[in-house]
Image 1 (cartoon, one colour):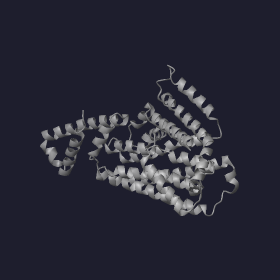
Image 2 (cartoon, one colour):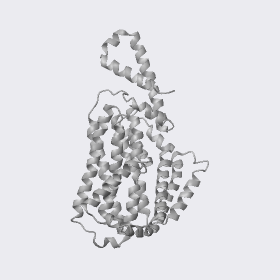
Image 3 (tube, one colour):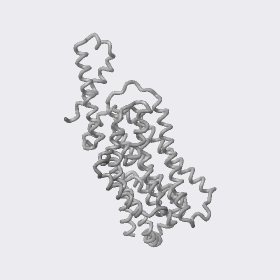
Image 4 (tube, helix red, strand yellow):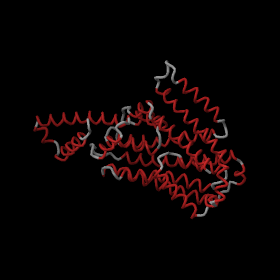
Length: 385
């Protein structure tokens, strides 16, 4: 049991390091700071940044600062944050390579790629620098194969503790308990994909039923959604109201997917598929892909209609943003936001100075607008120099 747990920890460590390294690359920053308010201008930068992001949770929080500081508008934030779901792509590739290519081959290619990234003529290219993180992707695959070999050690423990009967019997009580436990862990654990790894190893070893794997994966995503709901509650009411509805839609979709899969499973049988390891792998990948694709479409559809509603001019009104920026000041995204907000402050101070010297123009501006801009100036001035 302990060997399997250590192996599982190594998989999640490599997965976390891979996400962290690719999210800190210059390539991702270049895409995030590209200007543009039209979809054609930020479509591909958002997609590239999505592939390079660490996780859906982390990117949602990071990109929300770009929106709350008004560096991005609401439409770009919704589109950009939804592309962070593409960060699951790498885990899918890892699962797809499992049983197809030996991890040593992938490790060799990754080492060669990392070594070539230090060559004088190419080492300053952003895409080449980003390729250095692939070594952690190869390690994830290596530890995944090792975990599969060691998962047999877990079987005896599952039998002795009778846990195997809990995770292989599709009773409503068992499924709800798995959903609740996975949701709590998804809320607490910041590593994206832990439930995918656990369910993948157990399912391919026939130690986890199909419905239990679905409810476990949905539990992690639901826990992440609840985490974001709690995170949003600390924002200004304008931003909180905007995103609160989206997160409720996501939670509703995940619960609906779980119910539909449960109902559908009563009428579908995989027959002899459980005797074929390769078939089990693709059943797993197909099911999880449908789940994530549906989540992506849900966010995009909601964002399309929500962003179509034009708001009046929005100012920086979220005082809590300043505290968030100061806590993450070492993050490149936060540094970029601070520089943009200081530039905005200079413009606002210039407008205020012009209005003070031109009382007639000041009288033409509605009082509530002047109050909004004064409040914005006070908020931005709280940034430490």
